[in-house]
Structure formats: C-alpha cells, structure tokens
Image (tube, each protein chain N blue to C red):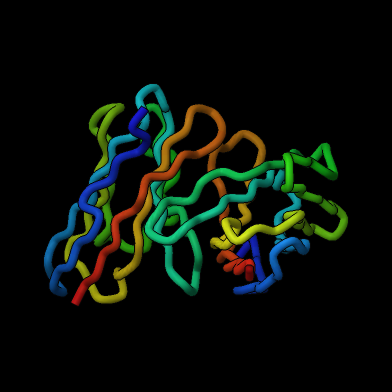
Length: 111
Length: 112
C-alpha cells in the first residue's frame, strides 16, 4: 500500500495567492483528517471527514480556509487568500475506526 | 487552550539509558491515549496507545503509563537507542469520536 499521499511536498507562494493542498487517503479508510503543525501549537486538527462528510471543522482558523472531500479517494485544503502566518507544515491523515496514518506533509511558505 | 500538554520541548539521553517523556491533559472525558513518533520530513507514525481502563501498556522497549487521577501519562523507552531520536507527540481522544488532540511534542535526542 502506498500510504497517504500528499501533494505538493513543498509550496512557496506570495501573500494573497490561493493555495491548494491535496491528499489521497489510504484505500478503504473512511475518515480523513487535516492537521497543521507549528512550533507554538504543535499538531492542530483543522477539520475531519467521515465517509466524505465534514464532521468537525472547529479547528479551521478562518474563513480563508476551506476543505472538501468530493469522494473517498481525494481531499483538498484551500487557503484563499494566503498570509505569511499560514506558513506551516500541513498533514493529512486517514483511518478506519482507529489508528490514524499520516502522509508526509506539505511544507507551506507564504512570503 | 491546550487540552494536551507536553511541557518539555526537548530531552537528551545517553544511549542505553531510560528516556521518559511526559504528557498532561485537562479533559477528564479523554478515554484513549496515544504516542506518535515523528522523524524530520516525514509524517508522524503511531507508536503505542493505552485505554483509560488500563494503567500500563508495554510493547518491546516502549511502555506507556497512565495516571488518571493526576491526568498524566508518560512514555518510557528502555534502553534508548540513537534511532529513537525524533519528536514524540502524545494525543488523546474522547469516547465516540475519532478526533485526536495532540500535544506540542518533545524532541528526544539519544546520544551515542
């Protein structure tokens, strides 16, 4: 199994630009999670889906952040417009009623 | 408000000695606790977990202890090896949810 796949691995953009992060969960998993890692706050849960339906988006910091899961094999996290304080590593994880498996992350730098 | 706290950002231990990583939580509803390990440029990977009905769970060199009255858990690594050098995150979840609340992590460095 390829594990959770995230793209791109690195993204550098300018303030005000739209950023889209992509995730392919492990086949057969029914829950998908988006996290953000920063030095100050560690791993923060932004949103999670169960069976493609958003269950809890209380961690989404602002309306500039949005996430979709159009089908069981794909999810996106979009930031529009991006700001320098959004710079962080963003992880996607998937699970099947238990242990969460993480992707390698996308390192986002907003200049 | 951090519901899961790892107050030591870093820890250095000699190879062969015991590493003890600590984690405190505030939410008494948490009933499942986990430790994840993260190497640079990789995603976190699951290490060990414990249910609130237990106070200890052991897996090889790794043991997790849970003290519910103190709302504290710890991860013991014995003996520590250089390959254990990584960032360790503790996490907790409440009944009926697959949502994990993570701490800020502790960077462990095992010195050869």
